[in-house]
Image (cartoon, rainbow, N blue to C red; front, side, top):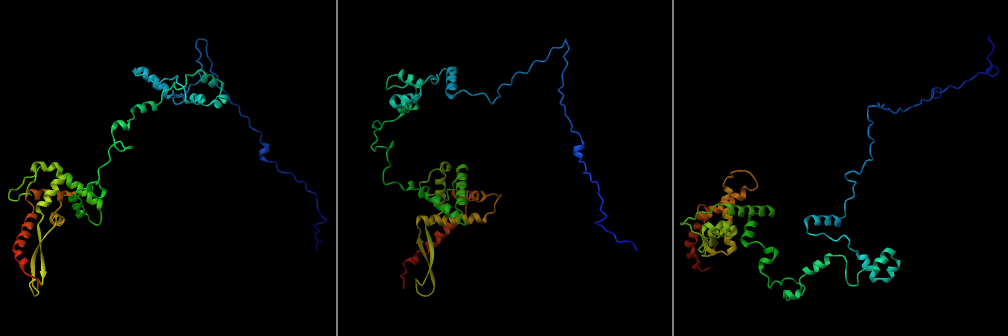
Length: 331
């Protein structure tokens, strides 16, 4: 049987050497920077030495505005500003004696040798503006503080911002409006007026005359608002026929003609025109095609080619035949 192994009694000394680092073993590198030297022969001339670089294009100091204006005045012959003019600081020193004691000696000497009190050595824009000012005494304005006369009261109705457009233009614009889009209706209204202005003069049909007192057809494009008003008022019905029950007893309804006001007449005429336009096919695409169709229908109304004239005559015939019902007394 082998004897037991005793670890603590069989200890031996072991020599340990630290591992040398790789960095310490490699010697440091030495770098040398060699400047190339150009050998110049006896026959070859040496290169000129580079001069010191001057200021760049954006580094030069620009002259003062007054100096530039003076140089320009000498060239044009108009005369420029005086460069040797004084400064307002000198005048302030002349008025304040306490500031003269604390001012530099150079400014104190200039203040003593300056011009007498009440004159200036420099020019300002105030003197030029003073000559251009208008005295209210010379203009003869009754209200002081106003260059022009005040408007006479009461003001005309067109002076109000809500009534700046013609009544017929505003009414037609509101009838053209859809879904509350007023800006689109105003654009269409402007297109209609522009088309009436640029279109050739219409040829009026003598069988369907316009309103009495209308200007000649050749002058209508010169005033598109008058052109629009004349086209609408010419086909506007004077009356409307209303069916009323029980006026003669029983359940039968009688046709009763009733007169229309100016706005009602124009509204009925515009609705007729828009109804005819909606049934016509479009000859193209675009946001201005509807307005151009309305303008073409207005020109057709003036020339007597539109079907609105037939509707107007039909309403008037019906009203004439129903005027006998006005004498029937209500029961």
